Length: 111
Length: 112
Image (cartoon, rainbow over all chains, first blue to last red; front, side, top):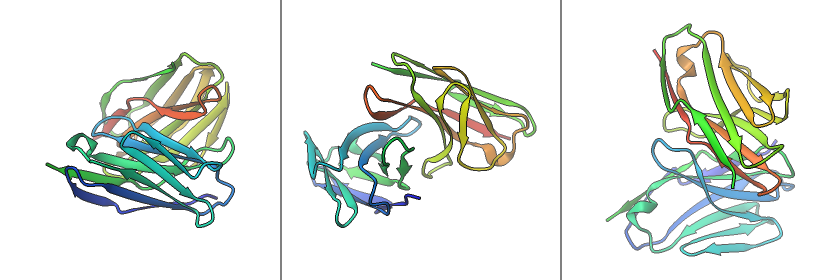
């Protein structure tokens, strides 16, 4: 089955700097790659996703890139703000199968 | 847009007591429904998912069960809770309309 590895597990950046979180997946048939942000005590919130027919997608300060050949995808957050502090999860799936999640990255933005 | 209702928000139960967590979805039909568990500071573990009424798939053997009595209702149950059942339980919904997975607000369960 699919296996998703996510790193780093923790990341600290200064406010205004960029943050990058990387994930790799094992199943070359996976075609959907979402990213979730989870704040303390809340359910994960979908922030951006990408499908395998696209190499990059951007939404304001957030962007996701996908390299199908290498089977990895990354989340990029520019001009980080304190409210970006949270746990971020990547995931992968194919067709209608359940998402397989990475173990999460705890991002701290230091003011 | 769809809305996922999950309750209660927090629950403290003694070991050996029963459990029933309910999740209902509004604003969509024929959703795929999921139960995830998250241990403190850990990742998301898929427990059960359902593609329709009465259809339940279990991902891991455990002390829990799930049922889907109605199209937009998903219930997580246990006859006797264990200490290891403590965690943050999340209901999630996937629909063909949005082709995305959305999570509810979660239930923090503490078994003492």
